[in-house]
Length: 266
Image 1 (tube, rainbow, N blue to C red):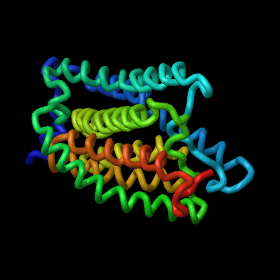
Image 2 (image 1 turned 45 degrees about the vertical axis):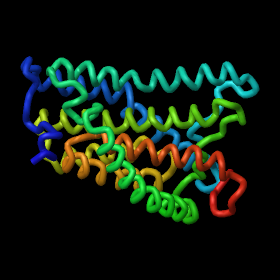
Image 3 (image 1 turned 30 degrees about the horizontal axis):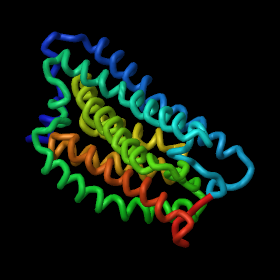
């Protein structure tokens, strides 16, 4: 089945890398990327819980200014942050090349661009509306902070940077948390269910800074994405879906914030 081929469960690299090496490699990749983000999000969440006032009275800003009042310096920092966030993906590509596999082994290539985009658009349409409704409910009931997708100055590069940020988020998360992690856990002998739980909980963990709602909502999204990856054997559609979700959230907030009543603002 194509789904199981994407996981590469139980197959070891051609160069006979030991389980211990694979385990260490996986820990290091996560420590340099989304595993570290999970720890950071937990610390941030504890800080929010212990701060006076409810969670919904606090804000979590996703894309903010690094140099207020200095647009060119701010742009340089924005592009630097996006580029350096992609380094763990380059590391994953390098490690997969060691297996003579590369990123194509997890379905992150240009072999099926229109299929990936089409499937991604359908997934984004289904998850987007449900996700927004869940966020509004979680915030209203006090389980979530007010999420501010962007707080950039009104400069010419604002929306291009938001789109680049969305694409960077989607590539990092889907390549590492779905394609790479499931492949490695399969090679380490984890059962499909255990790998699904690990991937989904990890996805939820680095969104915990948004509150309990952010954790639960993204964990559920993680389950759906793992199941779709196993069905299609490709992360390409998931990258497309995630990018579309974030682009709509970032750009939509920039255009609608303060102009509609139903969109929460700090």
